[in-house]
Length: 59
Image 1 (cartoon, one colour):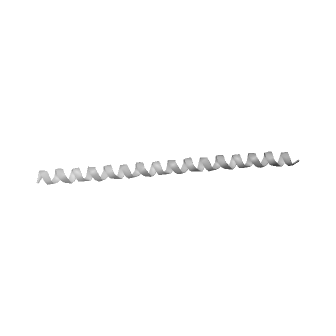
Image 2: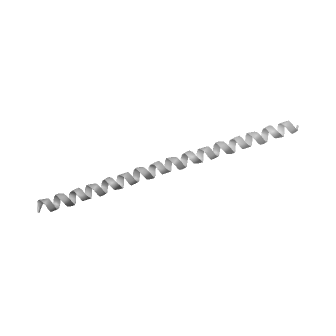
Image 3: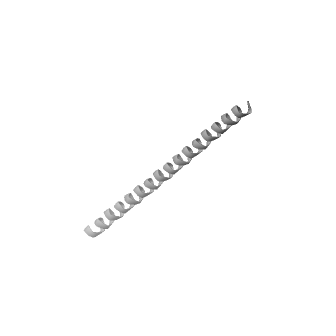
C-alpha cells in the first residue's frame, strides 16, 4: 500500500515539475516578445528621426 502511495506521489511531483518548466518557458517567451516589441519601437523612433532630418534638409 505504501509503495502505491509513494509511486503516485512521485508521479504527481514529476507532473508538477513539468508544469513549472512549462511556466518558465512561457515566461521566457513573453520576455522575448517584449524585447521584440521594444526593438520595433526603437525602429519606429529611428524612422521618425530620419523623416525629421529629411524635412530639415528640404528647408
